[in-house]
Image (tube, rainbow, N blue to C red; front, side, top):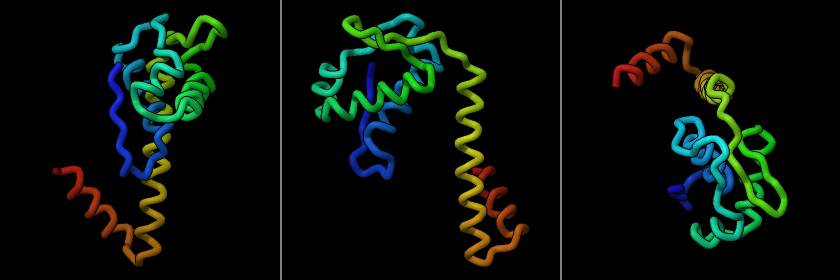
Length: 123
């Protein structure tokens, strides 16, 4: 498993870990039933706190991407690709809604916002 952390990112480190592991599960890089590295091993590999890795694994478990069996490890669940897609779609919608609100607060009209979106989509 290859995880790249960006210390300059606005996202907390545990969210970066969660996002990258989710991506590997969704794409099939991590197969159903495959064991994730232990909390300590991944923390040592990434040079971060074990508590950060534990928090990431807990988030993945809450979202049903992995299952932890105490004394055995953390294992990948079957990927529900449609559910994962909907979760990513919802996150994008939330981000767009915040951006639109910010644009409106800056005094931009709906037409100006659409124009900006069209330009960005062409790139």
